[in-house]
Length: 454
Image (cartoon, rainbow, N blue to C red; front, side):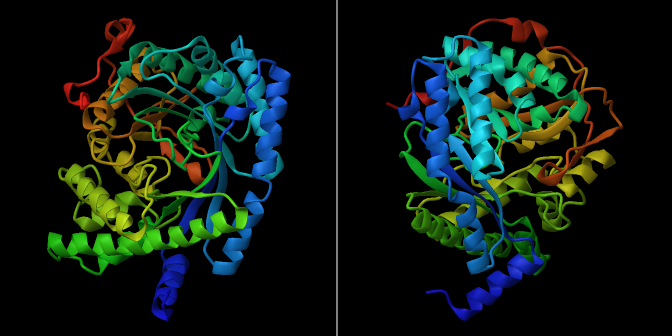
């Protein structure tokens, strides 16, 4: 039972501290849609999505009204399309047709984004995988709601350096094809290592092949709630600080659990996981950077930042797993530059650079996220950044990712405005020394020694 005090406390977190359910994401398997005829395949995909998700948005809105809990996004994730389209798609343009079908279905049911335009290539690429990857720039340029992802490595398999090299070129092409919109196509494309099957957050969401036919995953976020809580224990010991973060994460996760159970019951779809991720927004007071500064840093990026982030991430997870039996996805703290006002201020002040962000990704939930760089950055440099992040994930047995945006026509000192949850970003400098010879080597980097656990 939920007590009166818990209701009052939750209302305060929503009204004053930016607590929200960031997303209800319905995962839908498209494996039974597979067909060798592309037209039949697209028809099967459209029918299944519009049937299963027809009430998703309306149900989310009903839960918002009934419980007074803001649900910012309603989303869909699908089986990685490289698997679904393998028999029918013989060239990249065939996959673009599927992307347009997915976009049409997403518009029909009214969701904000649809993820799963994806390929899983941690150990090598099939012809279908390669064709999908090559199609990504055009697919993102010609759709509105599609998000793409490519998993290029894992702790068990190592890193596919051929795919990493290719992704540098793909990101550059995606930037060029959406240059008139500040290269926004790259904001909907993420390259991952150790991608989870049940992530409800975009752009890396897809419905893993180990999942049920359909599932409800909920992502809940509350950086403002955590910041307010630790303001009350300013100057206290680490023990008190950690307990405060854990208790707050527990309360936030319980809100997500309530929404997930209600959505599952009303839609008749099994509940999957709660992803408790402190995902910032451009809104004032909704910043992970400001949490780290409240912990005691003059600015995020200062010495001690990685340690503070490690502690925050761990305590958030410890609190979350006590509140729900099914915590999954990424769950922890996100550090997207463009979506976090505190991160933006630190970059502009010179306190935070890409190298420090890379160090922080060793202990946070994901990786280098929503980072804008100069449009003329070489593809090999982008591939090198991806390889570095994938190596961190592979060796540390964690998910890492890169969502980097080479903004055409922009230089260091300028900024770019994406709007909405994507926010705005200063153009960040990258190391100008080239990794070209390293990236040009063919093949893959083997899995680390500690991957052998059988």
